[in-house]
Structure formats: structure tokens, C-alpha cells
Length: 136
Image (cartoon, rainbow, N blue to C red; front, top):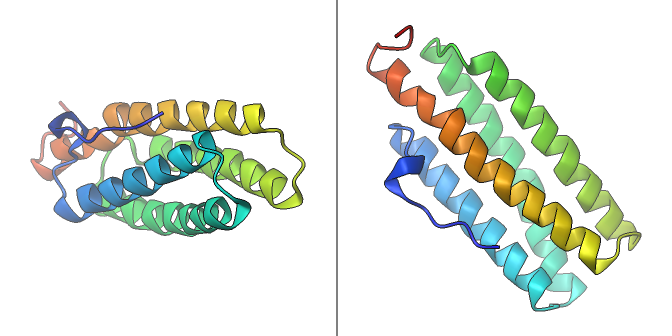
């Protein structure tokens, strides 16, 4: 479970792309830590960071889409709510030790697919808004 950055994931907004790269790098670290069976301290620190960082990033990205009147802004917000709920569930289960390793791996696999799919299908539409072609 590793996400690789490519130009296909670019939104055309440098600070959003930089945030996506940071999110992906830490998500990859978490996936690697889980697969390698790293301790709760390392895995927990990555979960803590990702929970904070994802929400922080989503706020900035949503503001950007609103600012450029991107027609997918509402879809983007709804998708972010889904991710936060799914990730929060994983975070809570992990903190309580109520989740087995396979469930963690399966959840991370689902979130990996979500991250890539969301950036490709929704976030990259920001390019059109930046160029003034949002309605086309």
C-alpha cells in the first residue's frame, strides 16, 4: 500500500499539491509501519499527525475551491466528511486497541484508494477553475 505522486494528481495550485504530497508521504509511512508491525508509539504518532493534518488540509482546500467557485466544491466537502469519519473510526478503534491488524490493513487499503481516487476525480478539477474553464 504505497501511493506514488505523479503529475496526474496535480491540482494546479502549488500549495494544495504540496499539502497532498505531505499527506501522501505520511499516509505511506503509516501503511509501512502497519505492514511492518511497528509499535503502537510510532503508529500512534502517525495516526495523530494524519488526523490533524487531513482536517487542516481539507479546510484549506475547501476554502480554495470556494474562492475559485469550483463546481465540485460541495462534492469535495462531502467526500472530505466521509474520509474524516472513516479515518476517525480507525483512529478510535486503534486507540482503544479494539481493532485487529487485518482490519487496520483493510481500512488503510480503502483509504489509499479513496485518497488517489478523490485527488484524481475531484481535486484535479481545481485546474479548470484556476483557468476559468470550470463550466466547460
